[in-house]
Image (cartoon, rainbow, N blue to C red; front, side, top):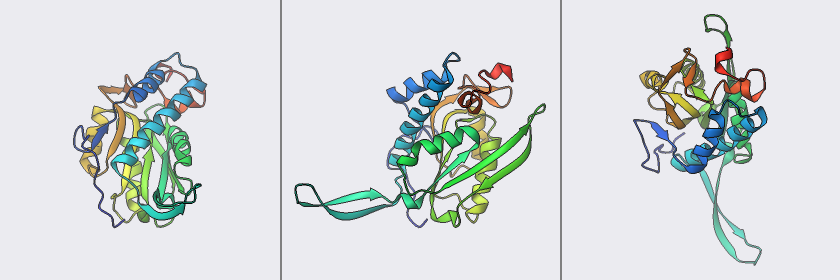
Length: 234
């Protein structure tokens, strides 16, 4: 992308981390944190908070837009401006990212999808297999990357590395959106990916069993698909 890539709002918390504090975000985050939340309500809360975070992300880093003239129902002509959604790519990381990216599809109806997944082997939490698929000429798109949580930062780093390779070793125009990120996960991403803005609802104190943030929102992918409810069942 040739356009300057600078935030339009002064809401930086630390470096490239943008913590979104809003009553609606806090309400949906409370539902996600509650271990008694049923799966259906959990999915709806994740969708709602994704809309809120993406709304803020687009305000901070507006995608390319097109200005044109239209005729209104009253017959008058007026200038309007619209996001060129065909210049946006929605990238999903694992199961929770798929739901998040699909949630904002209506915001960007012409946007192609990309995906990155990593299969984890238990015990040992070692990464076994990575899979990714991206549209051609990924560097021509502004990319919004979605994952519900960032714990150690290893999955997020692996995804960003795959995106960087696909974009000709550039991460300009890439924005990472998550619900919760651990302090250690954020610090880990700063080592190699400090140029990527991170939009989050919460920065949590620590990791839990290495792969979950604490207090966090649980194993999001499992809570979405009703396969496992609590982190302590891992």
